[in-house]
Length: 394
Ligand SMILES: Cc1ncc(COP(=O)(O)O)c(C=O)c1O
Image 1 (cartoon, rainbow, N blue to C red):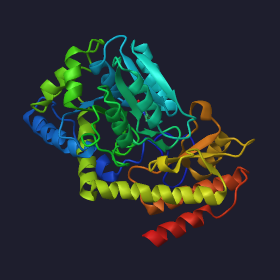
Image 2: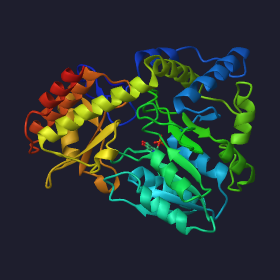
Image 3: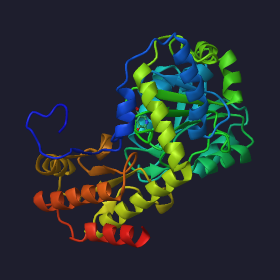
């Protein structure tokens, strides 16, 4: 039963929003240890080992900074550590979260430019390259892309964005939000030449909300030496100096760090490639169910289908919010709502984090029963289509 649920509901709540995700028992048990002195020798030793381990998840040999904050804080850290007032940033309007990041940049005094999409695909790589080629004076200091747009279920091709920046011979920093892709969808900070990777704890990392991350390249570190946007809490310099001996410049989220240690062990024991393949497979099963129901997937570009969530459009004249309310009430399952312009138009099925075949089948059963109960026009057989796929591929 949920911790706060005014009406007792039997059975386990299905938390199938695209983050926060289900926290595995092993991580919960790790968090459920006595809080320790964050200036003690034991704590320093634990953090030093953890900082090494977490690099493997980001696939970087460089530093990863951990903040006691939600993902939004790590967005701000990425921008304020590298840019100065009036600097230009090229951003890509993939959906709601890209829009929030741009609004933050504007509020911080960054001159951001937005490359539009229709919220049905990932970043427009050709448009990025064209804009950078045009920028002969190199006024653009950063290209910012959301890897997996959680509002639409579209994943941008960061390898292609890197190639576009290189083809234009442009020196801009590349900053990537991996809040709903890290540890779910293939991602390579070093190999793709990313300068700042932004991440959060509550999705693929299988933790509660409350930690966020910046993986930082040498080029970004160098930029931080001259960047003039005001920063204090987010400053990499103080953080990296303290991290060198396993400590933090302020009180860290001690118990969430225990959880992170356990989560990193789980991911590395499963193997990142296997983690990505598991997500790909569950996502494909979900899409087969959606197609069998005769419903439309919000992401219209198959190369950009997300492996961590699927946003599903409801037919005209029907309410995605009413459907979600029915599913919560009748079947004790939470699905993601439509954000911004997609409010009431889509519902989002999260299939990331600590998830196996049977949990996905329960989730899809809840959706199919909900479609019927809420009177949303659909064909039956989505659950069967997913089941056929998963059993054939098991
Ligand atoms: C892609 C993406 N970026 C940024 C955020 C904001 O992160 P937070 O809510 O942890 O501050 C989210 C949250 O869902 C997200 O999915």
